[in-house]
Amino acid sequence: MVRLNIRLQLPELLGFLMGFDERFRRMWEMYLACCEGSFRAKSIDVGQFKLVKS
Image: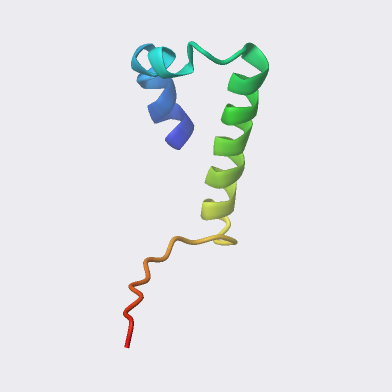
């Protein structure tokens, strides 16, 4: 799902990715695919913490 959304917005992202070579773009896509799979398998999660000095 994330990769599909990124592919749909690819023209806008190309401006961001223009300074990077093809190898980097492929690694970035692989990283996103790994994250997507990990979230689907529930092996990673996102959390938010607030640290307060006492």
